[in-house]
Length: 340
Image (tube, rainbow, N blue to C red):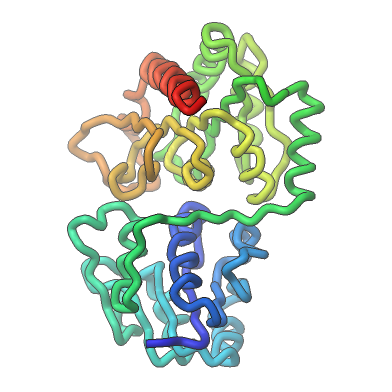
């Protein structure tokens, strides 16, 4: 089975797009001469523009305009990795003869009705990355080594290098990234705890702490920095590729289950993840070298964007996070020494 023109449908979010990168690399390896395009929301597109395995990034510009664009490209294979009505619709209107996606139990909003091949992931496909890769099995693709490529430019690297230089950061510094923000209120850890954690990291572990922020996070970051006794570095404004460059310069990443966490994992940066309303097995940090902190509550994995109680995050203590960071730093040093 061969395909000349392949469409990937994964519109958002940042983490979801990062989780789909191994699918793209696997498709390119299987179909080296095929034209491969990816339709994605405009605000997320930056992270995959100029990807070496992509021929075109198609920004989603509403159903009618995007449908017209997709029909003009004559796809013969379309893969819906989102599993929602909108993504299913785009898969269908692409005109592809083979429209591949998830079965009923693994999709929502009747998206499966737009497909003509439906896949049920196996019991072993518990993490969303493995679930995504299960869609490739009908194509004869089994992936053993997952490849995460985030294409960054020389200009992206220079921007971050100059910023760190201005802040007096050198390659010998133990730079730790903290990302307090989240798109869901239910994923937020209290600001005063972030501030206490920053102070303890700087005072007791002698690290350089940098607070990362994105759209809508800056006011919170400023409040956290203001109540610290040891002022952390506040990151410069970044796009997604610049953010990836900045994270790549850090020795450790601390944050909730958000896009930046998954970027860190993709870059093989060790993480300490504070997990609340989502499922750490399905959506937690992928791979080795990560620590998950979560509470075993009856409502764990509720997937609610808002919660009045917020126990899953409030019950995570500064001591727990600090201890996990200290343990992870020691483990990383031992790994580095063993490789020398």
